Length: 477
Image 1 (cartoon, helix red, strand yellow):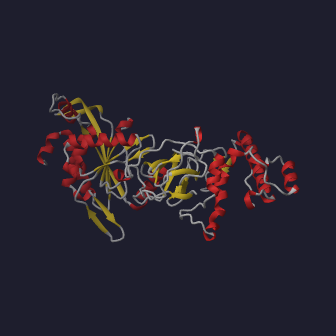
Image 2 (image 1 turned 135 degrees about the vertical axis):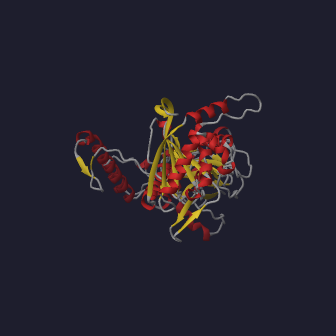
């Protein structure tokens, strides 16, 4: 006798309360092994494959791709134990794993090491039989009248597989009135899952199908008329007139998390911005010299972003006020001892900010290597929540978009962000003469609660001095 266990969306850590289903990795009828990934979800932090702690046959999935589920909501149900009659030849060969337990793990890479099972599909009629023999719950099956009560939940699973056998067996209808009502409204009784005893189709089931058909027809007609009404403005909830065919994009996942964080930053932090142009010609020459080294001892190529990150750690050592956060409840400024440097990275999923841990202990080559590693993970959507949180200062190189300047929004709850524009040839007075130099604009947005303009200006001026004369860094090593 099979036992049906319900697997719920687990707590993925970092205070996350919901996740969006991106892609199902299994279908109803598939045989899964313990800790086999069954669904790919996207949280506000990262993309995660969720493994199932049970081994058996998938009997139901809850939620289509694109659906957002809260933590603790059902993901799927698994029939654990070999369903009666599930063995044989051909497509039906094999049986579900015998284990009735689970690993209890929720994240990929922390499983029991059980080998991944070959995906098999149990025939719908046998799956239906297995499901109706056990309640949809996580409790062990005891052959006693006391535990037979939960079996009323079984039809919920049967509805999901009703489509697979719409043409098999007699239609469970007793009332001639129900049949006549269905004929009058072109309702196919074979496609209905009855809510009565043993799946009996009642008049309420037909009435519900009629209402669904009418609503579908109305929606179809409305869509067909949309091009005619496209120019008619409609009042939005905020009072702004929008066209009725305007596209609505849900603020969820990464985009929703970014929206919440930026809104909170603008609401809570009294920010100010200062900026300066700097001659980066010497910095570019130093980078070229570092990358010209060859041979076995030559390290990886150093990027401009890595050099700027190293300059930032040196500047924060001189101006620790900007490596802090504000505890609003205690009304205290918390100065942080270590620098965990975040850097803005644009990906297909949107803007993310990976964090280089303990950047103050690294040289330019080490920082560059870590930036390259985290950027690769960001582009493939494999950054973990821990790699996207805990930053104390952020570096934003918007020059890669071909722009010169910006006023960055602070990455809450940090106290400052340095923005870097594109480095390009410009006329510049150098040693008393007009020359063409590599010029960059640097902008610093800071929390005015943690420091005044003098401190912010001193930080930015020191960064600019290091850009113009990289040898200045030697005094801080």
